[in-house]
Length: 156
Image 1 (tube, rainbow, N blue to C red):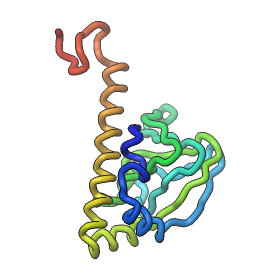
Image 2 (cartoon, rainbow, N blue to C red; image 1 turned 120 degrees about the horizontal axis):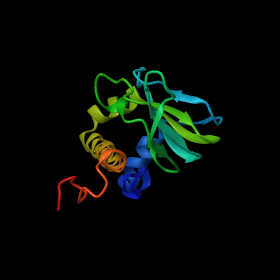
Image 3 (cartoon, rainbow, N blue to C red; image 1 turned 180 degrees about the vertical axis):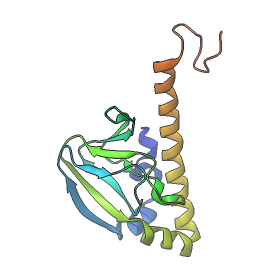
């Protein structure tokens, strides 16, 4: 993920300060499941240490890792968009320390304070766009015909 999408880079000091009023410290051990695909997205995390793998259920196989999240990055964006269900699962790949946020409380402040809400929406949107770009690149690496041309997949 781009460093421009980390909380510190994407949010002003004032917005970060207000957001951090909803934070509390939490931790996960390596191998702990952070959340399950299609589960209720009622919280989100900013990683302080460690890494979390985002994965997709594949019937008959182990979950496929689609992204690895590290220091300063947002874990979970589904909390921001109805129906508030996780689109992927997540597992701690190493010991993790993180700030955990109550999604409903943050959404309420977003509704009450338009400036704060816009800043959070832009940040979460940047994260989603960055992860979609990264997923597209991984899919092209995996499935595009060898020597098929440029990044668009079109012949040159």
